[in-house]
Image (cartoon, rainbow, N blue to C red; front, top):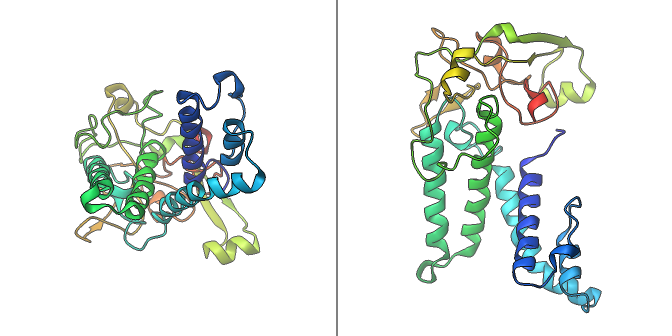
Amino acid sequence: MTGVTHTEITQQAFIRSLARYFIDTHSIRHQEINKNQEYTIDELYRLAYPHWTTNQLQQRTYPLKSILDTILAENGLVDFDAWTKKLPAAHFDSEAFSNGSRRILQLRRQIINDARPKHKNLTEARKRLGQLLHTLQDFYSHSNWIELGKVSINDRLGIDDNIGRVAAPNQSTCTSSGCLKIRVRCSFYQKITLNRCPLEYYECKNNIRPEIIAQGLLTSGYSSNQHNENNDPVTKPINVEKCSHGSVMDITSHQPAIGGINKDTTIPIYSPRFDLQ
């Protein structure tokens, strides 16, 4: 998929935090950092320790790279793990906002506990950090936070079950009128990987209902084959026009309200709101 992925977002944040650490500890002068450049771990260490040889640099940065690899791997696995890939709370799908924030809070507590000397298990702490970051990132790409005009973070995520006003279960949140159905022939690769041909999907604009925007209510999309924490099915309501997650693989995107609101990628077949990615 094209666009900024979960692993890329996490890696960039990790490296920017490392740069801030070096500046705060005076290992690197602020003026040595080009704000328009994305650095690697090696490049930052080279600025901080210019006297190190290449071998020294590789030896000293290897542990940090290994830690980052663990975090990145666990972040990506949330989309592939048999349990979490269809769990709304892991992605803030299906308006599971309280459950999603509670999941972040629980993971945060586990990370802190894993880091305590009495129960020290830093490998588990890193894995859970990757999982936490995935869920946190999905709040912004799976909900209507951007459509509400928000330009800053939701600082209640992972702090409180109540992260803002949420649309009622019986309240319509999306409209079909903002979505255009696209039907195209598929490539051989798409036929094999997506198991469907031709491809049918929706491109959407302004498909959140105006009253939802006006009232500042949170909503997110439903998706196919989801389940809750008790393994009970979570299905898109048929008596009210809720949003779908959307994509060529989401069967619910053909159920009113058609389309979807995810902004995961810049590719229309995967993200109806690709323009907001």
